[in-house]
Length: 120
Image 1 (cartoon, helix red, strand yellow):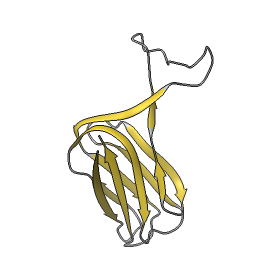
Image 2 (cartoon, rainbow, N blue to C red):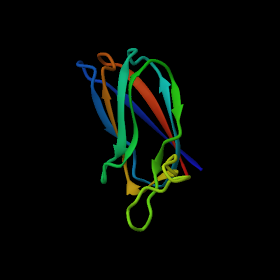
Image 3 (cartoon, rainbow, N blue to C red):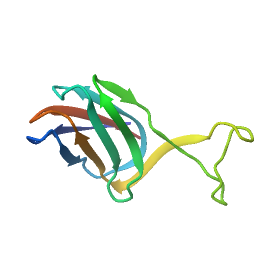
């Protein structure tokens, strides 16, 4: 397991965009460590090359840990469910030689947050 740390600093309008180094593997979790982002910060975190959704959340006020998963599908493209009409089956999000892209909004002027990506 590896830990990739990305520090993201907002501009004067409270927004930011940043990317991780190129990584490959399955994302186990992303840890947000609040430094001084304003309460109510919004995150959009995705794979840079493919746009695969990793974590999108609004109005975050404190440090948080998320273990993002994505829905799985059959070979025919149908959603896989635990039972007919049941809960979706999910699995870890994999990325290959890609960067994780961070979009920050409403973080406060010139504020900082740190993200730890745990990947295997």
